[in-house]
Amino acid sequence: MSDLYKAKIAGPFTALCGGASDNDGSAEDCMMIAPLTGGAGYAMGDTKLGDDSTVLHYTKAELVTGAKQILAMFGADTTTAAVA
Image 1: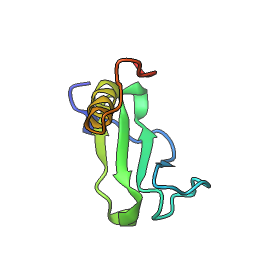
Image 2: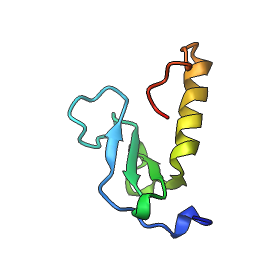
Image 3: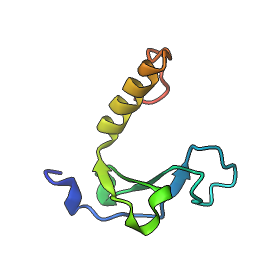
Image 4: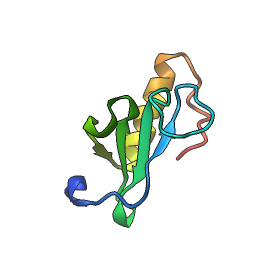
């Protein structure tokens, strides 16, 4: 897809990280992610900002590459990453 921002959000957001165990989208969760239509990628936002969060669109490749780079910043071994 030439313009990821033409893809609509295909499902509900799932809250990730931050420490909350109930995945309820509370401010403690930190990050939210939802798939885009047609498998184009994913939309991401920040639950701490609520409805005012800017939602960014990424391809799967962009997210995987970014995640590996973040893990490397923290000294994790990214050569055995489970995502492709």
